[in-house]
Image (cartoon, rainbow, N blue to C red; front, side, top):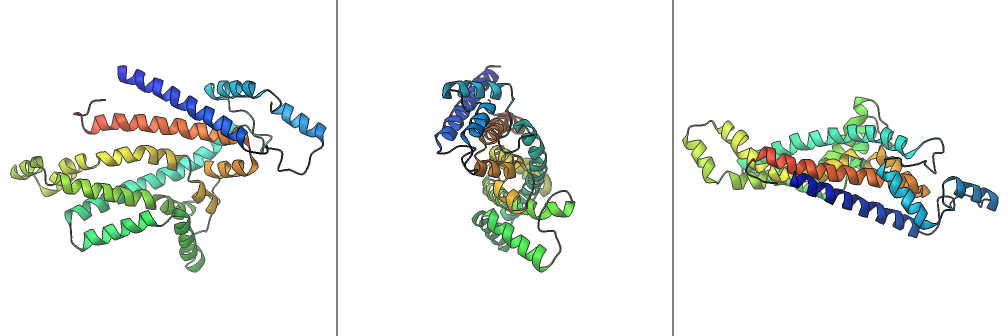
Length: 303
């Protein structure tokens, strides 16, 4: 209970600080949501500002924003007059979450498999090949990898569609583009930790008891080796589940990232702040789940 209370207080303070910084940073940017349009008559501009409460004093806008965020009423969008920010977050998150879940699943299966294989074949060609692939996965930005995938599989071979969302084939390339970096990171984490764990005394005891090599590796050694992966999963999950902004734009996927990029271009204050708060809340929750997962994987760890 003490831990839960401390985390709740820290979570509230963190989200308040993010909300405050986001609000004042948006207001500090020159121009406004209607300054990019052709010059509007003063009466029309005044009516628009009154409709969205931009004519209120700054302190009143700030308090209204904090209240709306606390009750999760993120207000209307400036760019999409018939939609609220809640609608945009809900619709965009469905797509981004589906894409993110696929990418995380691929990263976990491939990353752990490659990491374990590299550790078992340490200093031999499978290890060197795995680490070369992991280095390439970390070094190549996902927007370049996305372009390469489109060129090879959509333009040259014509095996997969170049973009859009809704069919299984349309999810293949964006999933690979999103999963490349976390797969490489997880593979390196698992490899380095497996090498350390396999040298520990309790592994020698397991082998002396006559346990099968597969049981020693996948039950006893891997359980300790994946702890750093769990730490990495927290921010990774929040990042990919809320949408990779670049990948979603390249593949024309109607996810949260696409709406966020468009809102920045259009200076849509309410969407920018709403998506930022949604991402922040998700990140905080993911970190709490990571702490709880630590406890499940290793009961010796105390929160």
